[in-house]
Amino acid sequence: MNTPMNTSSNVMPESSVESQAIAPAHIPATRRMYWSIRRELWEYRSIYFAPLAAAAVFLFGFLIALPHHMHGVKTLEQAHEALDTPYELAAGLIMGTAFIVGIFYSLDALYGERRDRSILFWKSLPVSDLTTVLSKLTIPLIILPFLSFAIAVATQFVMLLVSSVPLLGSGLNIGALWARMSFFHMSLMLLYHIVTVHGLWYAPLYGWLLLVSAWAPRAPFIWAFLPPFVIWGLEKIVFQTSHFLAMLQYRLIGPEPSSTAAPHGTVMEIISALTLAQFLTTPGLWIGLIIAAAFLFAAVRLRRYRGPI
Amino acid sequence: MTVIEARGLRKAFGTTIALDGIDLRVEEGRILGVIGPNGAGKTTALNAIVGLTPYHGELRVLGRDPWTERDQLMRDVCFITDVAVLPRWIRVSQALDYVAGVHARFDRAKAEGFLAKTNIRSTNKVRELSKGMVAQLHLAVVMAIDAKLLVLDEPTLGLDILYRKQFYDSLLNDYFDGRRTIVVTTHQVEEMQNVLTDVMFINRGRIVLNCSMEEFQSRFLEVTVHPEQVAAARALKPIHERQVFGRGILLFDRVDRNQLAAFGDLRTPTIADLFVAVMDHQSSPSQAAAQGTYQGAAR
Image (cartoon, rainbow over all chains, first blue to last red; front, side, top):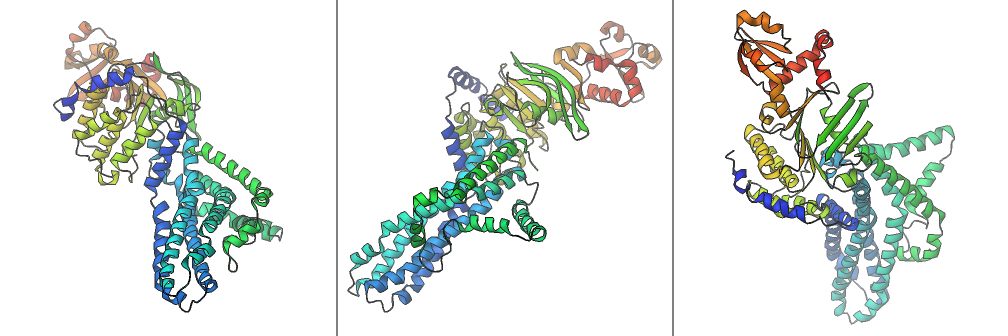
């Protein structure tokens, strides 16, 4: 009984009596959600490190290539053209990185906690399975897109600043260039792309990955990607059609012709071709959201039954 | 107030029956030790109580159905199942932040007070801590939660004796206040003897003994019988007999103390002694059928 734990035993009971007297504060659901999301950011630091690293690598490359790009630039037209492609690339690279992080995150989100047995700790706290699954969904659906958007815009801004320097001596009107690049408008289009494609259009994709993550007894990666291959193969052999593959392509590439990977034309041009009204009336969007909701519902139910593996 | 009430609690995994009709009632302010061999159904019972597993039969914990109302139940119930379930990536300060963020009954200052008495620093990550320190951290977090029911499933498994001693001491001195209820399973039966107010033996999914420690002490007696009186002692139907240094030690249930004193030295058996006796009893079916004492004694 002479353990050091004893020393405070005459203090602690008092404090526990006090905390008893005060009725425990009600914790709103939003606060539980907030802390659950913070928890994900603590655990998966690649959520912000990976897009930041992509931005840093790109900026580094851009700086090295800058003299080459700016060589012989005499007119505003040329300056615009010289900057346009790197802009697209920067946004594409950062968002692509975030997309890949989102895939790997979603696959591990409900699997990792079972593998390291920490699910027993999380389940001992008053956070529902619904809150947990939704908090994990917000990472690829909301956090990653907006984070990559912010990083992309910041990167583009730095690029614009840096590329203005060599032009200073050339006598070109920097203000006119900035106006022509229409930085604000471009950012807005990028945001539109991120919200519609990464947030809404890809929702069933993340829903599927989270479901597999909640269910898989092991190797969630294989369970996530093998079934589509099997379905595609079976359909090909049995019906000699490839509707499933077409459906997947439609989901990945999006309602507009090749929205993410645009060899010609800019992301902005393609997206502006599809107005918000058109996007919102695409049946594929709503079908996708319904499927996403079904996947998530199943993931929430599954997590109730799941223990450590 | 009744904290746990179970009637006909059943659970099967495929063809294996883990819980075979458990009736249980735990009142407020008790410290119940659940003791049984491996695979007896202890963990399944505890998992059902904290809403980790679905079950058949009736079960109420603090008046709630643990399976369908787990979220609300966890506001008043806390559990540690198994050591080392804290995620390895988390920092001590983050663990406290998170629990404080989601748990209304968590007293952060109290948890920090417990941690101040250990070698754990708030900047440590769980992966940097030894197994014993992880258990200390988990206990510090759990003890700072003002829960009505605390469920501990093998909380000290794999820890050395110093940590185990400290674990039970702090549980009793700093946590238990007579209103809280604790249910604990363990294989370290001897270390728990002085901690418990109630003891329950469980085997093959059934309760084989369930009594308070006062009842335990008044009911069970062990007699080191003089060799010439063994036959007379056996006539009083001991529930178990063992040989130590050539002398028979007989264990009796509800036999008059004065009557037994004539046969030799009396002592109250340890929980471990009784456990071995009851489990032996269970494993020899003919005897069990003949006496059936423990089925009858089970509530």
